[in-house]
Length: 244
Image (cartoon, rainbow, N blue to C red):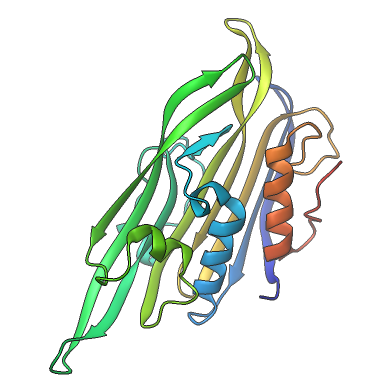
């Protein structure tokens, strides 16, 4: 799949004192066709959430985005019907079209929500969240919700109405209360409808003013995320490349 061009809506770059450093934000929009939407969604899941693709149901130093944080979400079109759940990391909603034994068409609506919940700390520097998958609606008899997520680009007679990935990424930081502890300082949001999409990146407490969002030197997970985004999107005015 060729890269999807993203046009900048706005960006922000300012100093903050809690956490200390710089706040880096980027918000962009892109157009997409209904035909290419399943390929994009499938690529996003496999590249950004490889743990789900491999059957793992825990995430280290990653959780679903906080629905109460005010992080910008699309409010038009289908997304009016799919407000983010608490710590939701993935949403997929759409319809299956199939036919019964007599050739009558049947439309089945469905949604799959993947949320995270705190599981445990791993030492002073890492945090683990468990993953819960909640399917709603009707699925074909030979297709489980997880198989649906992993094969969106191969399923016939599938219409996607709404797709969202919202991730908070943790970095180990020294805090006055706990000493060193994992803190969610980086945030990613991708929302896509059948015709348009939104890409938002946000990083807090960045030490280098010239750094891009999600490009901290010491974060291997962020390197994976930024490289995955670079393979999917061509962003106007922003070079999505990992800093090594």
